[in-house]
Amino acid sequence: MLIILNEDKYKEFKKSGKKPSDYCKEDLRMSGVKSYKFVREYFSNADILLDAIKKYHEISKIRKGEYTLMDLVNT
Image 1 (cartoon, rainbow, N blue to C red):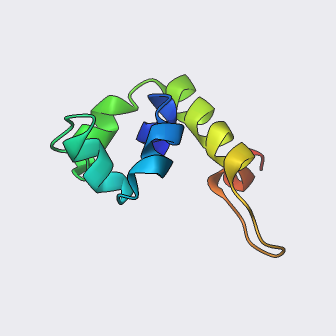
Image 2 (spheres, rainbow, N blue to C red):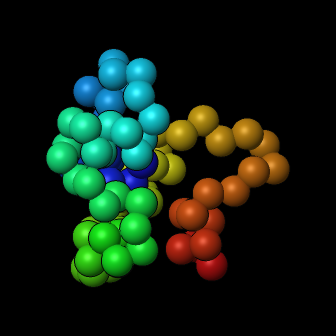
């Protein structure tokens, strides 16, 4: 999901009805999206990762008592 948000494809993703990994593989042509190496290289710039985490926090409907990655960033 963080990759989709970083690529500014959230609206298209929601319309697709696909799982995030399938959307990345099929629509964004990112075949290794679930591999540690791919994710580490994709988010090698910490600012890109932080921006994606912030976007996810903004769009998420977070239930009371639940936390997101943003909560870890803010501690």
